[in-house]
Length: 315
View 1 (cartoon, rainbow, N blue to C red):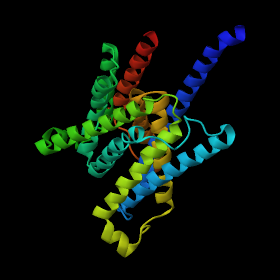
View 2 (cartoon, one colour):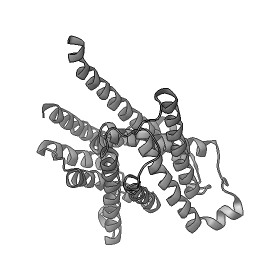
View 3 (cartoon, rainbow, N blue to C red):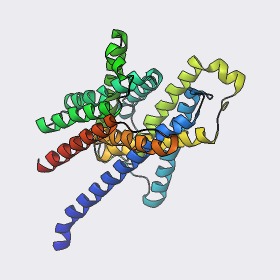
View 4 (cartoon, rainbow, N blue to C red):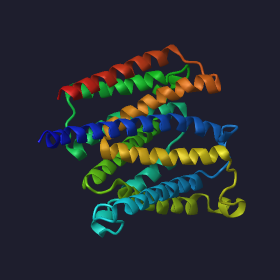
């Protein structure tokens, strides 16, 4: 009887351990992602086709998910929860997040002002999290979310940041649209992944990435078809490009794992910490100088994480 009573505690401990592991993995992968992107550029520009790289990321994620499934089939056999065959009612929801992620990737910019305004996606995630998933955040958690947004923004401030307030209306509209797209894509993906909790995450990932491949193939056809036909699919690729594609693929899988075993709120905090970690690592790799604004922003982010975690523990 004691052993039976201990089972829920053991399962709970396993879930917490798995949640902590995938969150830590996502933080590390996301922080190294920005560094690899910088290294993959030449004179500030991409020598390779970004659309082909995005397609390969989706293809690699799909292959890794399938490989994980094959391993599970060999070990446990094929069950209703891990079989690839499915119904149209289950699959038809996957093109939506795949299309949203494609649009988000195509519209994002590298301008410093945009990178600061992109922090609006923290707030949009919280709002859509409540609307779509019907999960209410407490007042303290909302305060922590606002502090997180303010902290990330403060940490990114530099001498040219004053120009952000002078961003034209079109820039603000684009930033808001991007924030809503990013938030909706993440929350909607979490909703469909958790709709059937017992469904194997690798099956769900496989179908999501299949549609991701389809949409990115369409992007290649419409944007880089001539360049790919003339220069080749892998033109401009290097070892760093390959590492970046691998990193993006593993990061994408880690994101889906976080959504399966945690939620979008954890993902937001994870990526925010990753941004700060990237800045610290950049000090040693690129001679980046940390400003007073960065230290102040880091403190605010730390307070936000503390408020959210303690409030969640008391609920």
